Image 1 (cartoon, rainbow, N blue to C red):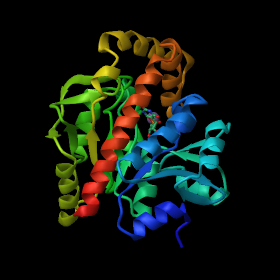
Image 2 (cartoon, helix red, strand yellow; image 1 turned 135 degrees about the vertical axis):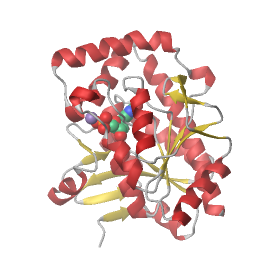
Image 3 (cartoon, rainbow, N blue to C red; image 1 turned 90 degrees about the horizontal axis):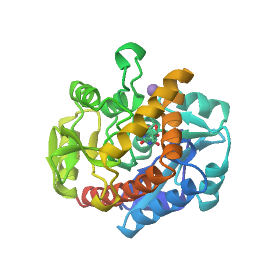
Length: 302
Ligand code: PSU
Ligand code: MN
């Protein structure tokens, strides 16, 4: 038996073939400070519901993968200290030892596939870090996209990463990278990275059809949908770049490594922008939740 505990609402929706959108929890525990993390998680769930889909936020406690959390569960996770950050490497160990863990993009994709959920919305994915040619720091999110058949909606990847190398990796791994409604690959806080995305689609239906076709072809792996932040919420590249450089220099000076790198950088950028980065982050996650729900709805009609 799979160690899955479904929220009743998620269970009912899946059985009825209604649209469901998976959501991650590392963004709550390691990506945003309290209380905005819990407020955002609630608002993201509401945005999914407003588009007619059911949200399924994933987290691990008591030896179970929870597919959908209660409001009290969200609050507890958002306030908890020392929650493990779970990727593919840590998921089984955390379940086996009964620990508490939040799922990254990679682990959320695994949980979604096990639960029978095809669409997952988040903020940004992990990628190839700058200096990866010496540090070897490449997020497990990328390898997961290559092997787990879930369509992931994100606002591209942060410029804390090496975006050209991230796109090269995804191309090598056979992951479709689909910019939504524009030609350029978005860069999280900014609508454009200055790089062209390999693919462009302009409707949720087209993205759903491509997802379905991959299934018919028996291709493993998912799709990355890169949805630009709404224009009114964007932070200009020129403004955010010096902040990113400062955070990266601090991380290097402190010798931050492995899974601590991304949370450290996110936290410092929040502090250095006095919260401006967070407002943009919240706006883009909500935007991704809405698109994820529309893709899930299109898939449920097919
Ligand atoms: N990028 C963001 N916000 C996030 C993360 C990444 O803009 O919250 C989180 C996600 O959970 C992602 C994880 O899966 O960080 C990647 O961590 P790493 O780089 O250690 O693989
Ligand atoms: Mn890493």
